[in-house]
Picture (cartoon, rainbow, N blue to C red):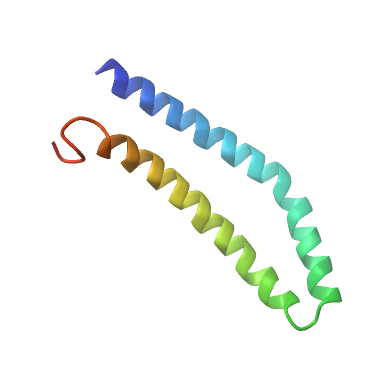
Length: 80
């Protein structure tokens, strides 16, 4: 039981740190994307639209892989 609580606390702290880091870097990143989209008229708008979506999906996949990976590799598997 204690292992589950500690794992949950570590996961919550890791997610909070990730959100804080992304929130601090996001304005610089979006400014760079805006500059790129104004200079590169062919691929710029597409990159400007897709990059934040891909970052969000990547963060979600990392969180899900961590949560389910911990449960899968324990004895008994995910539902055991």
